Image 1: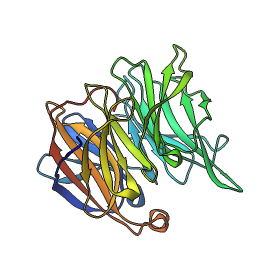
Image 2 (image 1 turned 135 degrees about the vertical axis):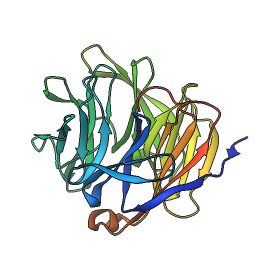
Image 3 (image 1 turned 90 degrees about the horizontal axis):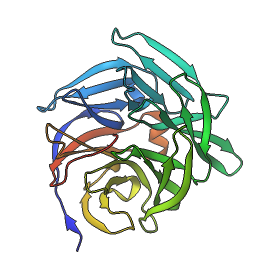
Image 4 (image 1 turned 180 degrees about the vertical axis):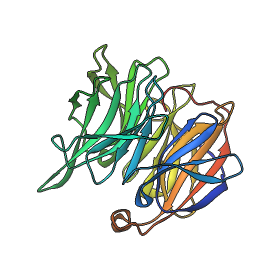
Length: 279
């Protein structure tokens, strides 16, 4: 039987949150319409860490550089310890980037979106430590949230328009093989951001159905958290024991995402199984 959990408010007062990551004892997230990467402490205090236009996804290679992907632009920003930004243009590969995950050895996997007559299609690109770029899968309707298992062997992606999570084997050179369904979520459950826990389950936000789900490989849903109003955009497991589940919730519309007409909040709830893997 699926268990229902109830989250409480941690903080609000931003526009559109995305890409939550627990790093250096703080929760980091992006506020794309505000052009910023922000952090929040355990009391809910928000601070701007870095300014980056249309910021979306976050990650850290082993050298500690902060990598930021953009939405509505195909771009990665690299921010060093002094706050200096270096931009990598990915417009040869698509119209926009979106979510991103960095592997333990520094490989960057990022969504790349293309515009066509039918609307938006997507691929996942690999950016190596040498900042070389190549597409490693084009077999999804629209890739979105990305996560890597604790052993570094598997990438799990939200396939938003197909209402499912998909898994790939990560080869030594970063290529993705053996595409398979991790979990079917059911019609209308459009998955967005996701994170993994130590039992191999995925916590995923199904944004416009306004629910966060914990789902096992094979599709069994063990827990659900309803937002009570607002898009369920992305979860992250953090805290000193990685048993605090942070939930990014945005009250907006599809048009509002583009125009910045949105209000965001972060809720939190304690869970029994700690986070594992990346993010």
